[in-house]
Image 1 (cartoon, rainbow, N blue to C red):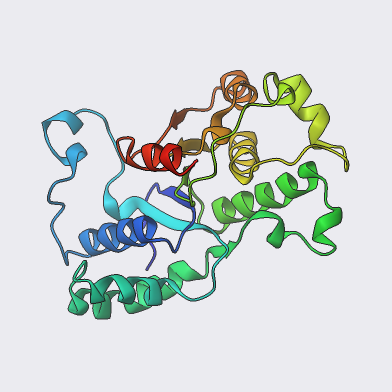
Image 2 (cartoon, rainbow, N blue to C red):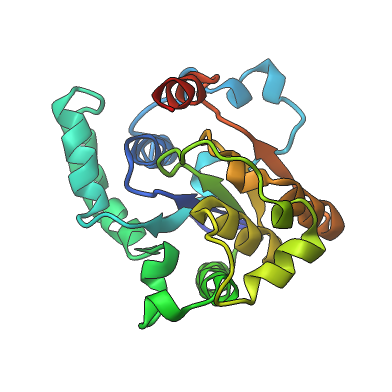
Amino acid sequence: MNAETGPRTGVWIVGARGAVATTTIVGARAAALGLSPLRGVTTEGPRGEGLALPGASALVFGGWELRAGSLLDAAADLAEGRIFDGRVLEALAADLAAIDRDIVRGGTRGVPPPCGAATPAEVIAHLAADLRGFRRRHALERVVVVNLATTEPIFTTPEDHLTLAALEESLTGRGAPVFRPSTLYAYAAIREGAAFVNFAASPAALVPAIRELAEREGVPFAGTDGKTGETLVKSALAS
């Protein structure tokens, strides 16, 4: 099972079959099923007391992914590097297969053809529909979107990303400037009332216009770069 009965929180991951996402999903499900202890999890210690956070068994996973393959395949690749115990993966095989059914194609590749003719607003509408469907299928109390996609190149914030009004005007035009995928993912999440965590070092995810939207809608957001700046430094050096 993807989660147990009772109030549940959806964790919708951008880059759901990547190494960090796969490790998170396998670890959470192993803990939920008693296959592994929640060792080293900060929120399980004194700092997490009184926060009323959902337990591992209350988390339902899904997400967007561009690469082919399955979640079990991604986990097996990590197991070869001794990230996981192969016996744990065997016990979770059916669980991971169930989660895979909630991992769908992201970005403009998820938009019915002709993809190149879609406006940014049409892409966002498709992404938002994915989130609504996920919430409805699992009767989720809340959804949190976590960006674990490949880090985007550093960019200078365009003028039409500085205010929400300017951004929304650009979203509807077919001749609009190119939008970074993280901006569209963040907009779709916040529009659907899903908290957004920018774990990747992609600054386009939380440009001023997106922050303005989140503050207007009262939706929590956090970021940038949950890897303590490692990816951000590498991106800067690569640029």
